[in-house]
Length: 306
Image (cartoon, rainbow, N blue to C red; front, side):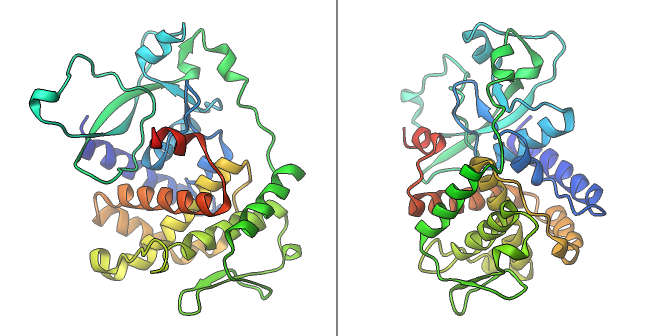
């Protein structure tokens, strides 16, 4: 499987999941937030498109551990992939080097795979990974990831997180939105939400939009996607919020205003073959930016820097 085939496969799965969840307002990226954040056996979170791929696969198979590794990666940790298990494919971006400098002695990644391509001349490669549930001898990884969600400590941390970012947030009204012209976020009062977790996941959605401002990440999609830019920006905000919810152990918000986007999202995903790669990368970049402002250092950021 090459990169284009992987993106096509994941996109088709995402389209089917959107269509299947339309009646319940449950979107496929909610599985990213509600399942354990996908991590390698060495505890490095997968990012970008890889987080989407692994979360969807885990949800479809009922695998709650969120722990993954290559065949050899599991062997290095004293475990063995069971015979007949099917691999899940992820992307690894590597810098290109002159032929005289290449070392092709191994095709084995180091389980720090990221589908958020950094700057520079890079080439994407597809690698096969297996979940802990597909492996014998991985029992310890099946229980270590059972983290409580939406606890008072998690809610307090979420409040501190967004307060540290310093965006201009107006509290009140009945609608959550970001207004680019005023560079302001509007959020209803916390008491208007059924649960505090839904308030903070909605707050993150609007903060992801906030990162698009020209003074921040300057995320202007109109030149590339034209009239579809608005729907794609909404997908970026949805995915970015899902990444944050997974990172923060906060439940995702179910948004009934999805109805106005569903058909548009499906059409955009079908008409732009590689748009999901763009959406996932921009969503991850938005979360990285918010984490930086909030003073949060994640294992993924440390691994990328390395």
